[in-house]
Image (cartoon, rainbow over all chains, first blue to last red; front, side):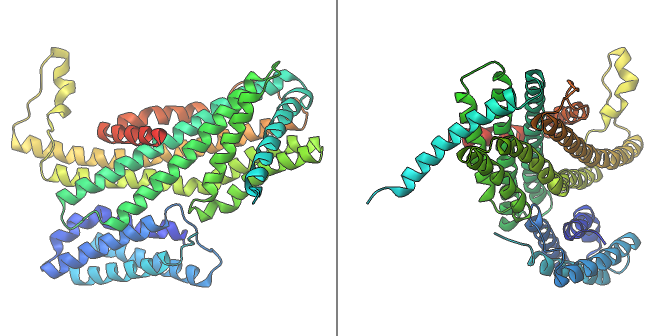
Length: 109
Length: 335
């Protein structure tokens, strides 16, 4: 498991580098819209945590970071296999939703 | 009603000025084994702090460029709009990096004044420089960088210790305070390494994805790839064959992948070397502050590698972003 920021970075970087290929796989406008929304949210989650901190010993932060780590791996595999776009979008939505929850735990002053 | 706050503030400033004056005399005259060591340490600290300033400036350039890249991406791909919250986060990050650049610049000025002090009896400029450094630290305290808040507080504490030590005539504590300041700065920089490195990694990732998209769409002239063939003869390549063009575009896409990885790695290495330089400088100042001999006269060896990366950034980043950064800096100075 990496740090919370590294996990959010991994999600965002995957989508940043794959958004064109994934968009080509989308079969409907709704899928494209979903991909676009998830990309924007993933980038927002990442930037919301740049130069910020988490309570590393917070069980919720640890749990979410672990879940994102597994979800990132799942997403990476799905993108690499160029499989079913519907399933891939589900993976994306799952990891980005977890990322949003994690980003909401960032310490703000 | 008496302006108690103003009176206290003025007293504090006077005390601070006195504190710095004594600090300079103490650390760089009587508190040192030799004044040569003190002067050398001050000169080396000047170069190190100056490089740190340029390092942050380079990060700022990469961030400004990333800001522009997101705008370009939004035009190229409507599915990747540059939303306002993200733009604000990017702008805030640029602002935080600029605060660090200012802190490093103030430290440079203070170290320069320290270096001049060898044999001098008028440390007025140095007092002013120390005051400016104090302000730069205070600016960091009010930032939203909660991660480094404890370290920022430690740096502020170091400045406070100087004042208090003078008040209580605990001269030894004054010397310890400046040692503590640089030590805390080093620790703070280490704690922020992942944040600095993510700036370069993001820049590399975004440029790579946009370059790949544009290469795929044929929006790049691959002719210069053939330049090594024609340049000895003063000829300009003109690639028109679609088959060759397609092959060359594939090669260019691979080169972008490799160069992107090198860009991210280059920035990461510069951060590591900057940290090593700060640690080395901290060790040397500790020697001087504790009255031990500081034998090394050369600058920290890793500093040259950081400076090399810094010199490459204007060539890496687009001219427009560099100009935008320069304009922003000018605006900030004018304010």
